[in-house]
Structure formats: C-alpha cells, structure tokens
Length: 155
Image (cartoon, rainbow, N blue to C red; front, side, top):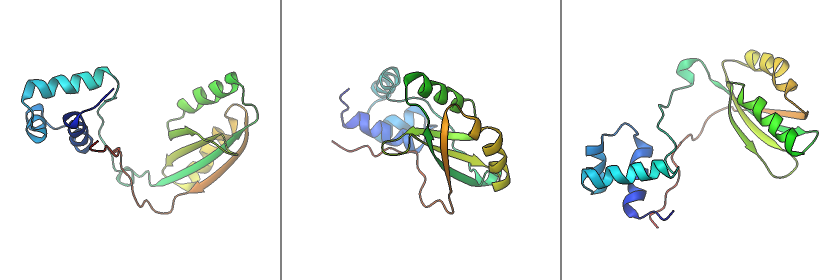
C-alpha cells in the first residue's frame, strides 16, 4: 500500500500516543476530522495499524530481568517448526520470538522477576520445548534503548 505524507504523519503521531483523540490527531497532521478518521480506519483494515496498547514499566512491576536466548532445533521440517512456535506462544514470559539466519534458529526474549525465576523457567519449560537441541542464554545488564516506534520516513 502506498502511504502519503498524511498517512505517515498519522502513524508517527499514533506511535507516540495511541490515546490521542481524533480531533487532536487531525489537528496535528493537518487534516479535518472525517478524512483523518477514514485514513486511520483504512490503515487498520489493511493491517498497517495492528492494535493499540498500553506500555508498562517492567522494573516497576518487578520484572527487571531480561534474557535473550538463542535456540537451535534438532529438526527443521515444517511440523517441527510449527510445534516449536506453538509451544513458545503458550509461555507468557517469552515476550518476543524471532526466526534467525545463521547457525541459530530462533532468538527469544524472556522477561522475569529474577535470575532464580529464569532458572526455574529454563528447567521447567524452556528445555522441554519441542525439538530443542541447544539453548544459549544471555542476560541483559542495562537497557540502553527501548522503543516501539518504527522509523517511518517522510518519503
């Protein structure tokens, strides 16, 4: 889908504050209310806008430990990958899962309260994921940057 300058500006504003009113959004992007509303609805219908969420402070919720885990699977057939991915979906502490190129098959991001909680998760669930051959965990020491905003260019 081709996005014009108004669409891009709407997306930039919504990424910064999804709670912005339609009146404020239309004013910020320089459109009247109805055309702005139509553009938002079109981008929702076309799957460009996937949803609106509330961002939480993990540390204030006592979820200050982030772990990145590289996983290698024993098999790479379609059923194996599907089984692994379904199992990952069922574990709440896994907040991201990416397929990767190179020697490793997946990269997971896990968020937990403590190293002890991660150890329990590792022993009780992660090592039992379907067809896991190897897990390699790396603990984040400090978060330097964290954003959900995609770099939308002006054109």
